[in-house]
Image (cartoon, rainbow, N blue to C red; front, side):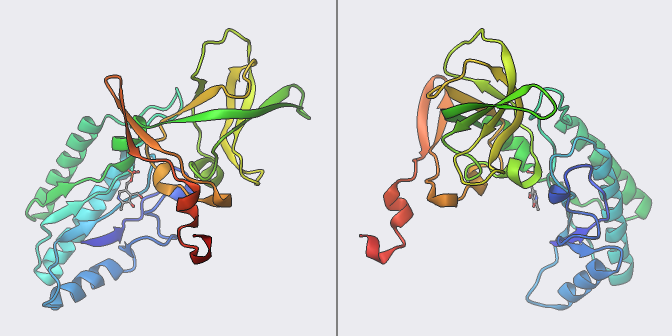
Length: 287
Ligand SMILES: Cc1ncc(COP(=O)(O)O)c(C=O)c1O
């Protein structure tokens, strides 16, 4: 598969937008690099050219970007057929379908979107007079994101007075940017709730922060949480199934947390919690 930069501005954060020209991913459609790559591949007996791939970005709520990508990639498939007499048998339009992190997030309806893009590809191929390729998608976040919840134990809680008036509660937890880098990396937003008990205390502006020695170590930047949260309470952060454990690190030598699957009341450890021995296993002097 040849990955193509289709020149689409996906309406999402710059760091998760991957198909405009001025970034590192893919071979450019605009400057002819993608066509040239196919030309070279088909000349090589050791390679078998299958098709084209694009991935316009992540956490996208608007199907328009996928429609434009589909149109542009089919136009390249036609060019490959016309210029090189080579059939594109596979089109892969990547992933990027957004999920709800916040109550107002309105994800795309995936079956509706898949049908829409299928129709566009079929129509464009018919107009271009090329055979219909098989169509694939790679929806990572949409599959696994909503399935994950991170549970944190509260450590210290402090109040700060804000310059603009009012106050904010800083609630520190036993994890942070090592198990969820998304807030620090690109200002991701999350919903968080008190999970270990019910509280009728008035809600107050809160920030959930991690235990790393960085001011930017923020898990949830702004949340309204009950004002009586104390050490050892549990907080649940929703929709952390994608791009959290898979991007976890040992920042500050913090061990990674366990991953537990829960189904019909039965909990199973999928990944055990890291131990101090795990952290020291590469150090020959430590045993
Ligand atoms: C090539 C490719 N396909 C699919 C995905 C999955 O994207 P998402 O999780 O936004 O659906 C990614 C994510 O980086 C990717 O790089």
